[in-house]
Image 1 (cartoon, chains in turn orange, yellow):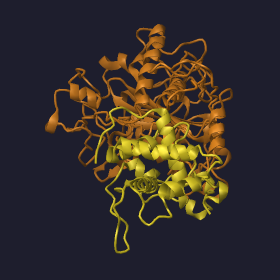
Image 2: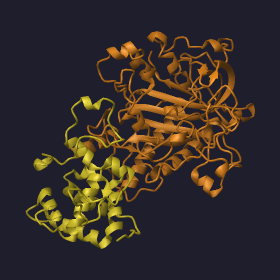
Image 3: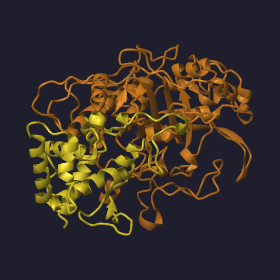
Image 4: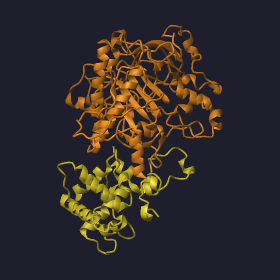
Length: 454
Length: 179
């Protein structure tokens, strides 16, 4: 059976064995894909050939390279300037004017999918504007000419499992938002999964559509992290002026508030269900100024300034990766500033480091080729998590997680406090999302958003 | 005894160790050491065992396995395992004791010092759990078609469904295995 699984895997990843003498230590597969400046979102990763005598590490490095190329091509396409239909405009280029509106920001915000009373949502319908925001909400605050306009509202400030917020070096809470693409929205709508009643009546297994290597994209969800920035820092970030909304809270007690702020993108998770990854592909990007690595701190090779680390404060005075003390009040500027360090989560999976470094260098050249002022040059791929053992758009029986590679993966703006290498505790996209359920406790195919149904 | 291998084992050595482990445990070799293996338990276990018993003792055991594997007529995995483990003997040799520790390592993710026995109806004490991955990926859970405490790869509510077959959990079910 395992041989069959291996054969399926080989077929799925289209790995054709060819003769070659060796594989360079930083190279992807032979005649494999390349990073390209394209508005087309890859439906799946594509793969080159493996050398016949590659070691386990070399095979993982090569295929990780192809998945990382997929991630960069997805990042480029999702951040491409959209046309009137919301898709990437082929007549424009990413970063040609420094910054640009993006495709993914025209996906549907989950706040506009899981509506009060379980009302039926629409992909291009009106956005939900909280009462406190209505006075500040003005047409034109963001670009509103495109179809599929998403709300200019960020409400989330706590991380997975309520581990805590992350507060930047100016004392401002980082904000998050989650959006889904049309295939994912359409599946939710067609199966009435937008409401508790619809989920209760749903008798099948939740199975979002898979993208194929030559076909359309599958279900995609994007989670982004944003920090308040000054106009002086605008040239280094993808920015949006958005309404930052804080719902009322009883503990600590504060009233709902909403105000426009200039926000810079600091983190971007992209989850995509594909033929080669029924456990979804998980690509995670960060702003290059976010945090130093453990090695940077140990060597003292630090930048003058980070978004979430003070290089002038170290040791016991500023211990890293501490959850901000309660009470958490995002409506006020905090005295606590998060001191975040990227932990080494790739011990034994060093291929993930090697591959991301090589792909980041390749992408940087392309982005700079468009414009030396491109804000997108300031983003880096941390890694791509992919299943090493899976069937076409379905898990291998007995291995529902698909044995992910790398074993762990965290974005420091989104999983700040669960970095590490402890199974079931440290951040592992596939392992964590495999626990997701709907409101009726039935498995929800690697997404937690269905729990928001009302 | 504790030694540290100075150089990583070769691919062929690790494959041979996986093949021997498969015969000893009754699992498929391709499950013990998959085509793509980001966990690399076979490498971890090989190096840990060598660090405990020394390279010559491991080489001797694997040499015996190689000669058994090459016999004509071909021996079954069960016959090879019975020979290596000396299951018919009351007092197994040092080499068989190492083979037994390797079986325990794969099944329980822990290292049991070769030859150390338990008593009073209890098993021997484990020296240590080799790693967190060794705990979550050890074969006892697969044989039970289940998962370790504190870690599950299955979705919520899996217990209401029939488990997947032993074969899909990596058990070598040929020749009546897993029965």
